[in-house]
Each structure stands twice: as C-alpha cells, then as structure tokens.
Image 1 (cartoon, rainbow, N blue to C red):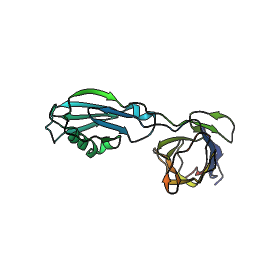
Image 2: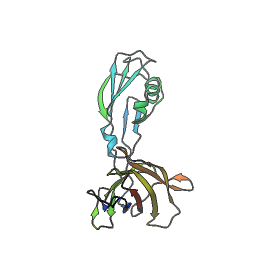
Image 3: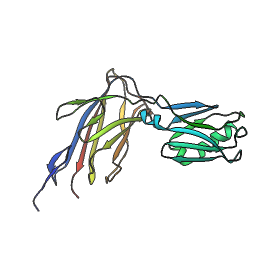
Image 4: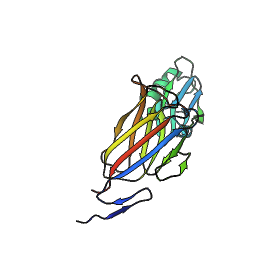
Length: 232
C-alpha cells in the first residue's frame, strides 16, 4: 500500500511516517497563581493553577440539616445546602471536601464552631496563568503557550500539562528537558502520557529538584519533542 499524504493545520507528512512536534517554551515573568476565596471562615482554593479557577463559584443555600449538608456541582458552580445559622464552618468544610465533584475543583480549609449563613454565588479570585513565549522550528513566536500541535500550561507547583491539539493513534516517544536561566539542578519527569489519543489528549509532567516538585523562574526554558504515529 502506497503512503498517503497527511496534513493538518499543525503538521504535514506521509500517512505512515511519524510526525514530530517540537518547541521551546520560555517562561516570562513569575509563576501563575491559584484562584481562592475566603468567605465565612472558609478558604476555598482552586485545585488547578491558573485563570481557569476564576470561573469557579461557591454559594450557600437553605434546606439541609446541620451535620448533613448537601453539596451539588453544575459545571464550575458549587452549591452547599446548609441549615442557615446552625451549620458550622467545620461541618461545611467536611461536606465540601467529601463531595468528589467539589473536591475536583477546590480544596477547602477552615475549622471552628462559627455558623455559616446563606449567601449568593461568589467567584474565586486572583487565579493567574504562567506565561510562556514559544519558539518553534517552523519560526514565529507566541505569548500564549501554544506551539505547532500542542499547548503548554502550568497546573500546579512544578506541574505542567501539554494538550495535543490534533488526534493521533499513538505516541511513539516523548522528550522534555529544562534549561535554567541560572545554574540549578532540576529535571523534568513525565507523570503520564496517553498511548492512544481520543478526545482527551495530554501529556503531564513535573519539574523536580531533589524529588520535590519545583516551580521554574523567568527565563527558564522547557524543550519538548513528541513523536506521534499518524495512522492506524
């Protein structure tokens, strides 16, 4: 069977030849921040670093019994049914952390006997993205962390996610290396990489120093090379 040409907005190759996705991401400025909200003795902090956390809201509604608070989540909107003026900060915190859908969005702290009152939805605030400038083999730069074929974002302390923008049947190889602006011992460690790509296409990795997830600094560079199979 003859090779067929394969094209997309990101790459061009023959169908049975692998596609290489390469770029160098330079961090510009300080590391991003987690969105958070302090309300009624509770502190809610987004699980994922970045501006995405600013879309999360928390509301307290009546209708539950103290000690049996009910947590519901629709999209990024968290709602807790409480017994207004009776449910304590500790009880509400326990309910939020025990609800899987809410715990996937936020971590909640706060321990005291003060009571919580009903309140309209309030957003988490001050989430910020880590900014990258991208150099690509094809030329050109971007300040949005988007290279040919994939997008890089920071999700936590020393934690990163590369989203693959086109579907591929599988990944054949991945290489990530770090160049520090100032001399330091740090390395990249791949946490997970999908081997069969569908709608959720991503590679997650972390930057570590002495086995501890560690943020990068302005001027540090992340070099990425992915080799993708482009036919079944």
